[in-house]
Amino acid sequence: MSRLNKVDVDRAIEAAAKMVVDLPYLRPARWHVRTSEGELLPMRLVYRLATNAEPVPSDAPDQLRRLGFQVVRIGETSESRSFWWVNHKQTHRVELEGGYIWSPKENQNGARNQTYINLTLVRPGDLVISYAGAEIRAIGVATGAHQEKPKPKAFGQAGQNWSEIGWFVPVEWSVLSKAVSPKSYLDRIVDLLPAKNSPLQRTGNGNQGCYLASISSDLGSLILSLTRTTDAAAVDRVMELEDQLKADELEQVIQGDVTLSPTEREQLIRSRVGQGAFRVNVMEVEKACRLTGIADGRFLIASHIKPWRESKNEERLDGYNGLMLAPHVDKLFDRGWISFADNGDLLIASETPVSLLSSWGIEAGQNVGAFSAKQQAYLLYHREFVFRGPLDGP
Image (cartoon, rainbow, N blue to C red):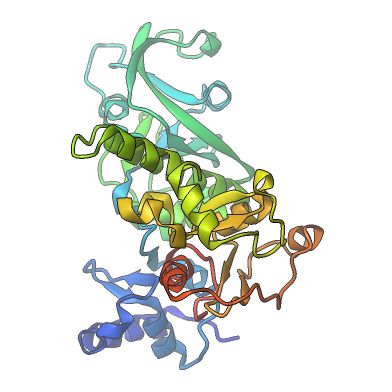
């Protein structure tokens, strides 16, 4: 298998930047490489120019990230979220167990502290990196805005000189099975550290004067990439929670949309969980689970092909934008572990655990029957933006 080196990729990016205006058909590509000027270039084009090899392997994004390049997936870009880094050596255990971060409002002498004020800037869906004992121990998602709350009793003697009232942000933590040492990757991290209020010194040691630091999407994406190599399951849990929070926000928008009738709002909200008019519409198109053959509706979920959170209102109720799936198949399909070709061939992402599929009786090479033209349009979206690979699949 071809492997990348930085010199060849730099040359490929330079060449791709000149070519891409003449290759508009590449723009729908799923993965992109971000240049130092902020431009997005199709990753497939960059990879092929760098290696002169096809097909592009499924680990190409990770290869590029290991070389220090930022790779983003359209539909999952980091622009919609902010990244934060919390240094909480004294309190990390109770904060992870309690599901929050907390800080006093100001320093002991009453001075303003930006890394405390930062808690008031966190928004639901933002990602928080947990750092303690010189290691990244967990990744979290803020599940709500900041609140004014007393210092947690669980702190005990930790922070005994802190004021009793401070800022509290709820965080759903996903603890890593293997911690990551930033010092081991300092050459890739150091130039991405913030100029002010950095969580780390340039030596790689933690900055004791910093509690919650705002970090760039470049650094945040790099940390996610590093943690994924040691605990992909933990990162996947974080991504799933992010999607849930995004859907929660959209549901609130629908509930407040006065241009919709109460019945329309109810049906759109019920469709999120595969109920109501959407389920009825899907069952008119799909009579059974394509993979298991189960036709008893009591044991099937009406699953959106194009995710509810990404769909327009009419798509959220469209029966052609759904499949009736057994619960375990719904989970695989919803999170992009599997997908389907237009002709019904089962597509399995290379990172999907084979033992898991085997225990559920799912095998490569299965064909579930061709899909209609209307379904194919939604499946194209699923393969391009939800399915985890292969990159050059149908």
